[in-house]
Amino acid sequence: EMYTSLLNTKQAMSVERKLIDYLGTYIDQELERLEDIKRFYAKVSSLHAELYNSPATALTNPLVAFTLIKRLQSEWLHVVYSNEALENAQALRSGYEKEEADLPNLEDLQGAAKGLMRLQDVYSLQVPGLVRGRFQRVTNGRSVDIHLPAVSVQLSGDDCFLVGKVAYDQEDYYHSVQWLEESVRLFRGTGSKWSPENEGTLHDALDHLAFSHFMETVSHALSLSQELLHYDPSNGRVLQNIYKYEKLLASNSSKSAGGLKRPSCKYLRTRDTYERLCQTRGSQPVHFENPQLFCDNFANGHPGLLLRPVRREVLSLRPYVVLYHDFISDSESEEIKQHAQLGLRRSVVATGDKQATAEYRISKSAWLKGSAHSTVSRLDQKISMLTGLNVQHPHGEYLQVVNYGIGGHYEPHFDHATSPSSPVFKLKTGNRVATFMIYLSSVEAGGSTAFIYANFSVPVMKNAAIFWWNLHRNGEGDADTLHAGCPVLIGDKWVANKWIHEYGQEFQRRCSLNPEE
Ligand SMILES: O=C(O)CCC(=O)C(=O)O
Ligand SMILES: [Fe+2]
Image 1 (cartoon, rainbow, N blue to C red):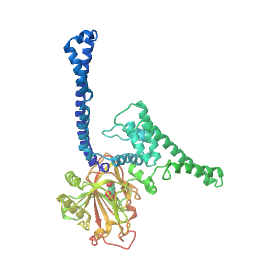
Image 2: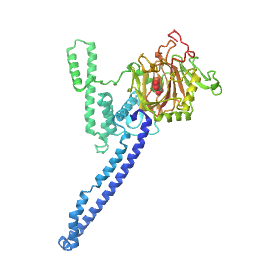
Image 3: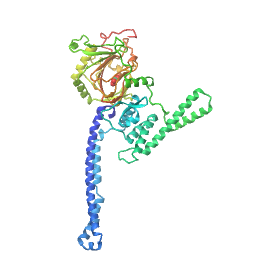
Image 4: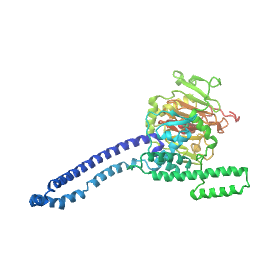
């Protein structure tokens, strides 16, 4: 699952470098082989040009006759039945096979394509812009670059075909139409010139695009007719049409088609806010408007922090969210990422009493124990000094280091358990009362942490950390903490989570029966 973490995608780059070397060797050998064949061709054809005028005399020379017979008995045979082409191809293939275990699989490709479509949606990016390597949005009828990446590439007709096909196979005609339109445009532009690397052709793209348009139109027709039926419930003609449209859709689709709307609207209730917060950071906390939001140098009265207090910024009171600037140093960040590398596995989420992967959390994560790494244990101490909380296992979970991949994200969620059977309770130290999250990297664009109901988002700020309470003082989950990691638009985002549990904090955070606190 190389698309779920940029670290793995980086490793893919070195695999391709090796493949480039194999192909280079192959081309050299094939050119040499063709040179040899050309030499034979030139030899034989020039002999014929010389002797053609007088073949009868020429063959009276036994040397000429002998070489003719030899060529026809043996030389041509060797040239025509040479194994060299096969041997060269075989060498190329065996090089490729050596790397096969490290190559992305179909799931990676589909995951990467879905990542692109996610970025398209969340950041309202235009497909024609993306295809030209630009990150653009339409504002007041004009395409505006929302970010200029340091490096970029243009996509080919086949690249777009693939993204469109991934959408198509999911019966997501909203996306397939947009990507296949671009594919058709680009394939037409190349005059259907054959390329050995391509999977699709203009024909394939047209075929898939036509069907996508058809499905889109029928479902549009269906939704318009349903609206009409709402105003005119006894209209028999409309009823009949609806029946026809539904039959058409059902015969061409296993699920009911999503139609013109964007698919996967599980989070529809919060989606618009989420996307707005990802795009614009929402209505950011404005300190002068609310004097209770402030910045200070904070030592928490702890001797360990007195000489080096941490710059604290209170971002929100409900829920209570604070940002600690420069909580960690560059070298500590690098060390943590280094330690985590080998342990990175696809991130999971709690579903019932189990842990499972999910589309709504695309990243890889690793757990680091303080007892195994002195940097981690120093961070634990510093978190403890700042928050006054007991973060020792099992009162705090091990440090979870997360690396996001292509369009990697974590859709709106709670960090605390919302069901009594949640795996969070396995530690037997209660629910996750607080979250301390450290940003171990910066990003070029995207990837903010969005607090949906609180209506603000925190941009990725390298070495800073945010802290918030997940639970009210009465132990109930605080619904206002609903938050998300926005998809990373450009960059390599790393965070580390320290989840602190209820038990062990009884004297640091007193409980209360007041559900407001
Ligand atoms: O990456 C982020 O900004 C948020 C991550 C998060 O909420 C989590 O890992 O629980
Ligand atoms: Fe979270």
